[in-house]
Length: 150
Length: 244
Image (cartoon, rainbow over all chains, first blue to last red; front, side, top):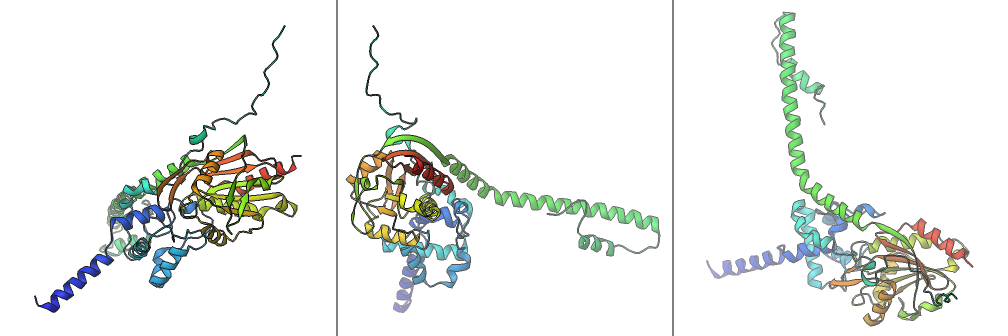
């Protein structure tokens, strides 16, 4: 292997590492996107049915958009979709961009996401009575004791 | 799905065309009957195989979606009538001005707890609040105020809250989006009975409370769980506005 081939191999490896999918990408998608966008980006996630707006299907939209456009939607949000800047780092947002590209092209087996189910349902689940114990409606406090008889 | 007793004409025709023409009607009928029976058995097996493939493929999705549906049902929406006095507090609104809750005395106030990067129930709650705001007519708008209190002070600065309000297209004349430092917010969360657990940066597990406060500052109705029905909130607001 000559010097040129070695350099080419290193460059290809770096591209491969940069473009490859990682556990972090899966976890990010499961935590932040899957509830609405669904396991394959088809807009059929468990929370999508409750929304009164139409969520775009990745497979129809992502391929028509540039990476910059996708990144902008993720960072700034759109409609009821959250804006993930400044909550996520630029590296994490890049991971999200790659993930939606991957899902739009290759999809993913539904069963794959089962291991992430805990992450999907890790929001908005603290019961109301966890803090103060409001199990029953509170009545106004009685300030005066009944007068003793006799 | 195929109807086994009535195979498609195309399939039936192909079997009929494939038979030799002998001229003997009885034999022809017998052969046709035998061929039809074989065709039905073949189609039946085909349909059975299709069903097995379908259920094998659909099973993981059904299990997953069933679990999620069960989780959603468990969350549910609950409406409770309560009487909880709300203590005065001061937080910061979406344009960085101090906002005193006690300044809303004399108005019915709807208070919701949400954070801007929530990918779960909060968008539904804010959308429901927006529907409530749209449903307020004439004088009702002046007598009613909406408040969204963040559960994520780390991310939800006034600037972030303002962008959130803009995305939902809300009218800020009677709706404030409040943030503040964690110590001040903790007191408010506790006063309303809202539990907040930070899971990661921009990811919060919290109580989904939408509270309706009467004109004297007492919480009277609490919606807990997934998105409350805007019509039900409007009814509560109108009822409390009629109280003198």
